Image (tube, rainbow, N blue to C red; front, side, top):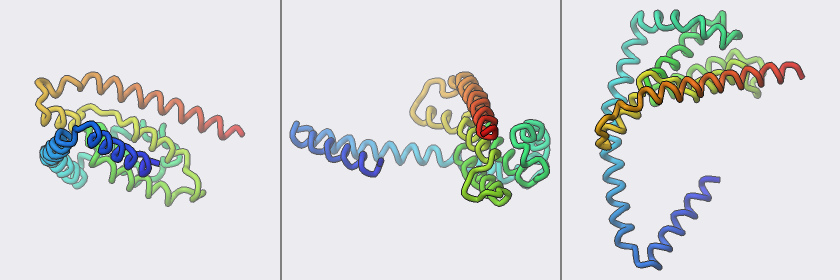
Length: 194
């Protein structure tokens, strides 16, 4: 659907710019936007490399095991099907830690790895398991203690106080996670009764 909507927007925009005599400002905006996009990408690259490197180092130390033990009670409640599988619990906790640190770019491959492992344990290969559903909701809500990517973007765009969003992010992500978990647990119980 989007592959049809975006070309329509582009054609309408260019047509309007040509017929209204605004082709020169449109060209200037295109070049300014591409320059800003490259600058933002370079600014974010450093932050992403730093935190991905920290996650890789942490994965090879005992820190992740300690954090996994800390998150285990919550993981066992949310993922009862995975209580005996320590490897999947570690993969889920790695994803949760990356999300808590606000590292969406690091959390994505970790989440995909956890989903792949859960799919191997899934008895119905064409249907998501309850654990997979809970994981998707939890990963989407993404509770963040340190929203590093957003702070980096705000900093690169010249915000006077890029960290001022930390407290609102805590509230928003915690509320989203609680609401999402309650909803998915209700829907799982409702579907199991049928």
